[in-house]
Image (cartoon, rainbow, N blue to C red; front, side, top):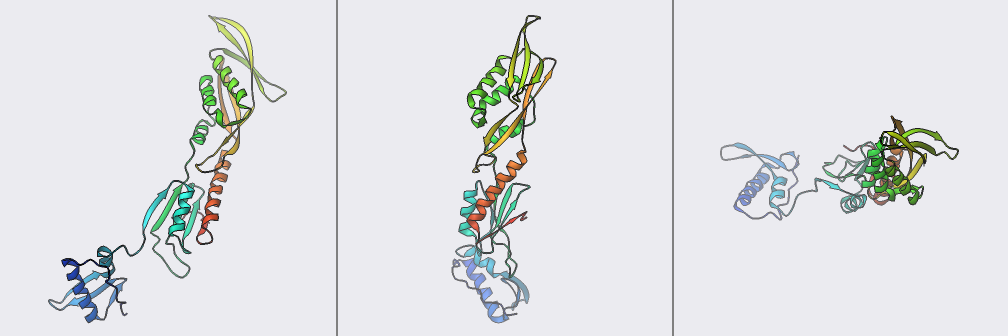
Length: 287
């Protein structure tokens, strides 16, 4: 097979490169260019008949103006940066893989083409980042807390609550704080769907004044699961338990996995709208 003659333009002139170029050019002229693989030429040096190999393309890359092609693994923190990078470096062979299981998006810039293989070693990665608000609500999901801890959570994240109104939730949190230490005795379901908890204050070692409080059966929050995503409305069903007069409270988010899936799909749709039809978007893993 005849070896295509490589171009040596742009290689810096140094004693080392000059010597190598002399050897390579002599070999190419004398040996008709027997090629082992791309850029690797085998020849016999007349003096001593020693077989040597020189990677011509590697020589050009090391001592020339720049690398022969783009490579690397890069990571971005949002979909806007992902789109900008693909727009700058992508072409019709570029593939984008959206992995729902890992909430991970990968762009293979130099992917295999329909007419042949490619190196697939120029990649871009984007792992969606949960918002601080979603992390808090998800961390406490399904856990029962003491009255004080639950009240602090409601006060801290009241900005996320959209039903009931903020004033009602603040009043509820203050009621929980005010009744720390009382003995809860019973509860009953009201016609409104709320729960009425009955308690009795403790005065020294004796039972004191009785009291009641009403708690909603659920409340709604509006939170963006990921940075850059739109807020989603999620219902949180209020849970409680009375053990030996002690009240513990918590909530259970309604189908949070569906919210995460929908939010990730929204991110993928944004990327798809921006990169297609130049690049192709697939659902799955591009590893």
